[in-house]
Amino acid sequence: MNSPTTAVRSLLASLSRFGGSAAGEVAALRRRRTDRRAQAICPVDTRAFTPLYTDGACPLCGWTPEGYVHGTPLLTPYDRYWGALGAIAAVSVVMAVVVLVAFARG
Image (cartoon, rainbow, N blue to C red):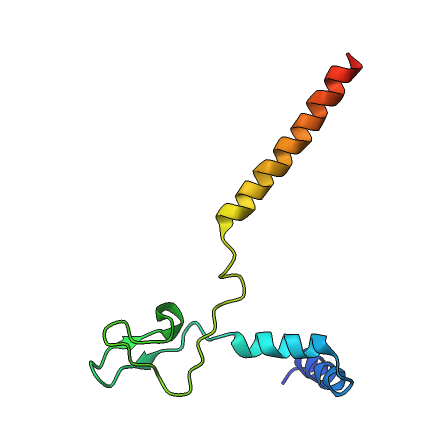
C-alpha cells in the first residue's frame, strides 16, 4: 500500500476508537461503493450482467448473486432537474433585486 492510503486508514482507525461518528460515516460510504466493472453470471440463463446497473439482480430472471450488497453510487439520488430549478430561481431573485435597486435609484 502507498503511504497516503495507510495514513488515511490509520486516521480512520484512531477516530473510530474515540467514538467519532465521522469515521463511521466514511467507512459506511466506502462499504457502499461498488465496483463498476464487477460482473456476475446468472446460473439460470448463463447471462453475464453488471449488478450495479441492474439493481443487484439478473435482468432476465431476477437471480441475485450471493454476498453482493447493492449500493447505489454516492450522487445517484441527486436529480439534476431540482438543481437546475434551484439555480434558475436563485438567478431570478438576484435579477429582481438588481431591477428593484436600479428602479429605486432612478
